[in-house]
Amino acid sequence: MAVAQTKQEKESEDCSLLPLVHDIIKCIDKDSQDIHQELAKLRTKIQEAREQISNMPGIDTSPEEQQQQLASLRDQVRTKNQLLQKYKSLCMFEVPKAS
Image (tube, rainbow, N blue to C red; front, top):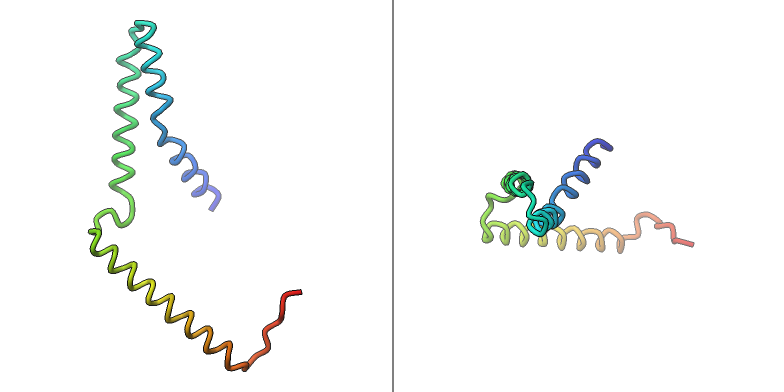
């Protein structure tokens, strides 16, 4: 679990393009020859971001399908909440009160 968490944190940190853009601007200001190397890093980072986006769950689902799924899940939550309220009102068991 900790490995998955650190991988997720690493991926979220890797999404920032600003440091690379800053390095490119510094290279332009200094007329440095490293600009091609910095641009290649930026291209690589953008390609990695595209791959991450394409691998996201649900990316292939249309907005209409997502709305249908959302409505279905909301109905499920509403039904479960109603059932909970019904069972609470039956008083078949005693619910301990928080002190």
